[in-house]
Amino acid sequence: MQQGNLDQFQSYSQFNSLKDFNNSMEQWLLHIKQEKLLTPSQVIAVKALSKWCAKIPGISNARICKIVASTWLNDKIGISRSTFKRAISKCVEFGLLEVHNLSRKNGSQSSNLYVFQPFTTIYDKTKQNEPPKQLNQPQYYESNTIKLNTNKRKNNPETDLAADFTSDSVPKPFKELAASFFNSAKRIEGLWTRVEIAAWKYLCDDKPQDKLETAIVSLQQAVRSLKLGKIKLSFEPYFYGVLECKFNELFLADLNNLQDE
Image 1 (tube, one colour):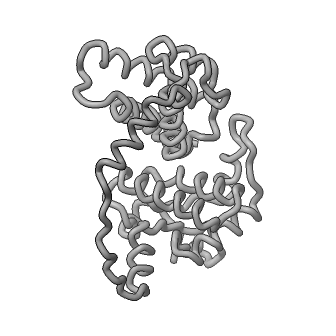
Image 2: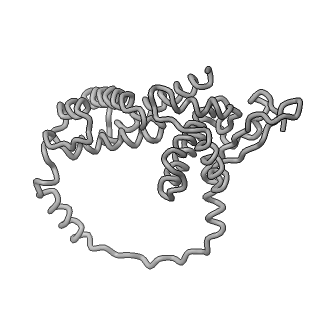
Image 3: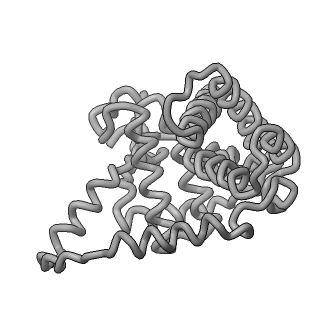
């Protein structure tokens, strides 16, 4: 296959939009983490490659040297060229990637075309190989027992400590802001857990300062909406929705910056 402008490879894309690609990557990264398919440094390699797939969702013909160099920006712990190659080889094995060799007009080796595969592709293949599952017998629960246990938890003072007892895993600036509105260590820790999830989903978990600033701005926006009566249901899902929007903006900005380099 001959090297050329990325637009000529658009037919290789497996995704309808960048959002579809991001959702698929989220599922893949979770699957990789659960199954321990890659080392931490190899995960960095996959995340770095995914950031070069903004122009046409899911495909890139970026040179290895550029992708590897991007992992060392902003004082981040980067990876080596050999680590990147090992990561790509493993990803091809378990179905995340297809790699096509590209050549120049004179026939010499050029860069590769990396094509990410939807998570449903590997899921469907796995499902086809599974034997049919037997239906489980229905389970019956005594509603009175569940209600009794719930009441016991509510009456236990240890389950809802004041904000002063919030875990040290929550950054102090976020804790202090959240404590101004919620005097509950458990609730503040739950809010920060949502920050961690959203940051990981949009590949911002390795940028602690950006993560903290985004969390604080999102909390301020969500609390403002709460005070104005704009939140009709629960606060936490609304807060997470704001987080997703903010982190997605950062993610897209990073992608555009990398493409411009």
